[in-house]
Length: 433
Image 1 (cartoon, rainbow, N blue to C red):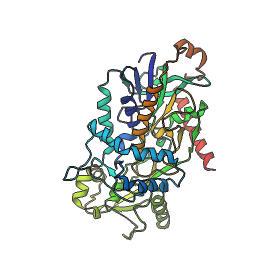
Image 2: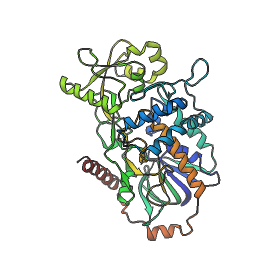
Image 3: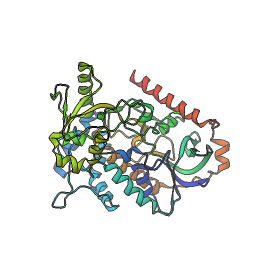
Image 4: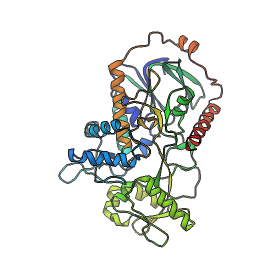
């Protein structure tokens, strides 16, 4: 890595990658990520990505999103996301994303909880992997972009008013590096790693959000944390919970009690279904409920959900002949670094996109399959905003940054990262009170 870049992007999920893809090709761009490039929640997304199904779908899509978010959404952000969704899907197809098709060649659409109609484009049960890998392939062709994995963000370089770069630690050597940039984009993903049970990669611990809290950058709704209703129950502790996509229920799967009876409407928003499952578990005194996928049909399960079928088989469950045990787990973060519709934060030259940010599009509870759409769209808008307003920071030099902005003690990065986890958990606890 060099000492200076035009733009630094922290995170290599769909938000970070799509941001890089839309920055000017004459700008030097650095993407860093905490682990391997594929260790992002974007890569894990199973269900799909929403697309407006014509003008007659707008009102329904808008109402579904607002209702799922308990009407705490930012209506302007919701409108922007929905109206831009066809363009987003078309752009993804242009970089090679292979969405499922009907026999006539039109895009197939499935349904998930909280949706009033089918509007979710998908690739089998690994849509996130398909989109992320195709965006990565496109970005790696860019001559102006460097990708450096295994580098963990431990601080921002900033004055009182503006961001001037990042401080990272090399995971393999332990060496701390200070890199300056005219603009910095946080796309650091979710916070699931701070919880015992989560569908997130364990390394995603909300570092970007905690650093912003520490640096006086506005952060909103830290206690808006979504629980996914159905993850495969396991007695193994400390591992990432395997998510069983909501699309399975969208295609007909049923939730059952210990007697084999349905106990809720499986297509309600996630928080409603989660509450029903937790109530049922409490009544039964059990650690899980059961998900019967057989109503979806063997062909649908085999073609649409092959990864889920395979993982269940690895755990000893045959989805074609028996229900599987499922339990809720932490899944998504609706709060985050405050950002506008162009990704701008309350600090100059600092942007936040994807799950790291809070632009209000999800409200208090995210509607299924809006996350990939939101991340891809607003990352592009951030890139275009940077391009349209790019102005080099004339005083930005390594010497200036060292003398005026670096306030942290970086002698023990692990201790610093643990302090961020504690600070974030404390903020969540206080917000809940």
